[in-house]
Image 1 (spheres, one colour):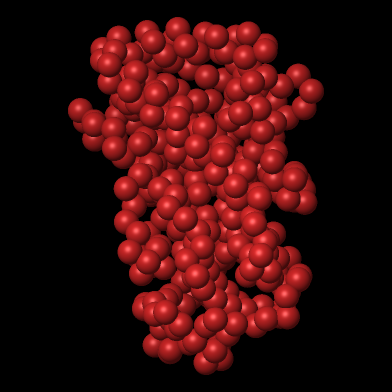
Image 2: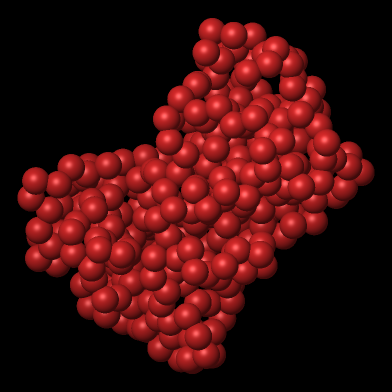
Length: 346
């Protein structure tokens, strides 16, 4: 590493890699991409992938599996099957494969350093690997527990808690389970990949819980007769507390910027878009980041749904699962199903 770069990107997840790709294509500025892990890509993640990635020029061939339907349950009873008759509309992706695919598109003009974490952030420098490195622009792509976000004084007030098991069995269908008694306004999930399936749950951390989320998940798995004996669960947070991305010469992208959906937990597509848009903003300060404005519109719509769902679940208490069954039953209508795909997935 040199002592100074025009741009330093901290974090080589989808957002950081997307930023580096765009900069390497359209800028002659010197770029350092810093990743604290020894390998770029692998991460515990359900890996939901919407087909919006096609708009970013990414091939669907990188997906593990593609699905033309989502089975949706309320309290273990399948209420609707969201179907797109034309073609698959959602898939799953291995984060390791995605990371390596994106890394392959980063030009060798970008200095990529793995196994080196930033330990300190300043207005025009970082400290990494015990070395002080100056920058003109800094991009925080370092996830929900972002050091760059912390330096900017932004606390995470809104985040999801996720817990996953990876079981060595390839399920056929992608499934979502709504059970207010176990997951509140959140959901359980079954996301098949190649050779294994992620089963787990996701919940708004602000929602009051009668029992711990892991215990709720275990109860649900027992009811579903899914055996996870000997498998260690992994948990992480998804930050959806967006409070800006442009802070002068410092930018936040992906989960560091709170770009994930508070309702679905989707972060890959939003990370890819925000990383690319910030690169364009650095290259041309007059660029107005219209694609970021669009994903913020989608995020806003998702958070309205999350807040409304949380309110209704609290208000109906023990009858909330009956409410879920009633509301989800509208999804049996093909017109409603198409709208759900349009506003929440595609």
